[in-house]
Amino acid sequence: MIKIFRFLAICTIGVVLAASSIAWAQTYKQVDVPFAGAIVTELIGGPNPQGTSVGAWVDTTNVVHGFALTAKGVFMSFDAPHSTATFPTFISPQGDIVGDIIDSTTSSPTVSF
Image (cartoon, rainbow, N blue to C red; front, side, top):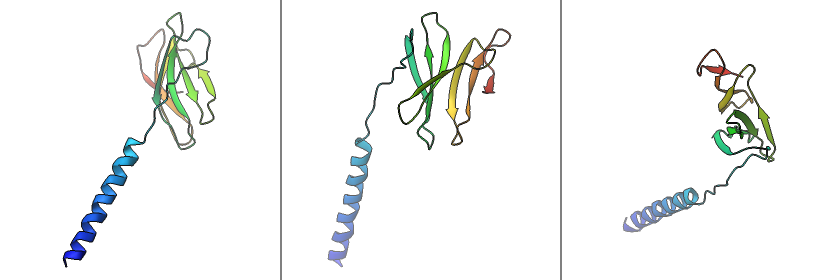
């Protein structure tokens, strides 16, 4: 009976140590958009199952644009139609991007774009 208890205790400790080492093994990478005039970059949502993440970047005139970053490292900048600022916040598994915009008539409604 004691041997079984020791075996279970050792297995439990092994699982805990393995799980904690996996959590500590995460790495982080700085993301800077390659667009001319970019002064601030913020990665906000994702990645989705395909590896695409979304974020926002600010240019030298303080205009906020959205961007998508694919798993292959390709950046794509976009602006929501009729907006003066685009803030993507989420990308679905299907690739639909949602977020907030600011335009000349409203002050930040949540929309799909």
